[in-house]
View 1 (spheres, rainbow, N blue to C red):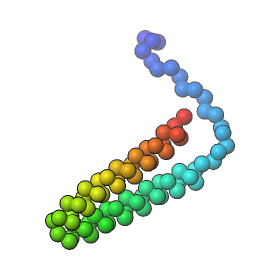
View 2 (cartoon, rainbow, N blue to C red):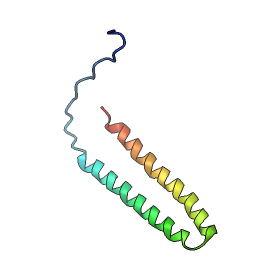
View 3 (tube, rainbow, N blue to C red):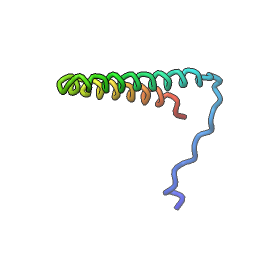
Length: 79
């Protein structure tokens, strides 16, 4: 049964980089970019069907870009 369990985690190393502010700024940037994208998309949806479709296609790409930017930064923070 010992072979089925994963190996223990390596010990955490204190680097003292204190990048909490940088992570906070990234999360706030993600929140603001998402909110602006959603509100502009909702406004474009009131203009008619063609601007609504274009806005939804553009918003999808912008939101995926925001998500990928956050995932890329989170991969560096994993121990």
